[in-house]
Amino acid sequence: MTRTRPYLFYDIALSICSQCYAKVEGKIVFQDGNVYLLKRCHQHGSERVLIADDVDYYRRCREVLSRLRKCLWFTTRP
Ligand SMILES: [Zn+2]
Image (cartoon, rainbow, N blue to C red):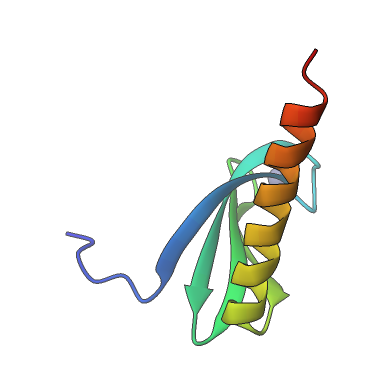
């Protein structure tokens, strides 16, 4: 069983494979104080990209972004 995962799952993100540019589902995870995007392509396997080296900073950015997005969504409604 995959009970003990060495990282903390944070979010799902749509991404692309860096080799074939196919759309792949990515996972944003926190590991060792860093933020990674884990991607899995059917042809090229899994890939790990470092997004940020500060979890707290990344989290704050995301919160601001999602709040902004909600604001925009409400203000653009007719
Ligand atoms: Zn690929």
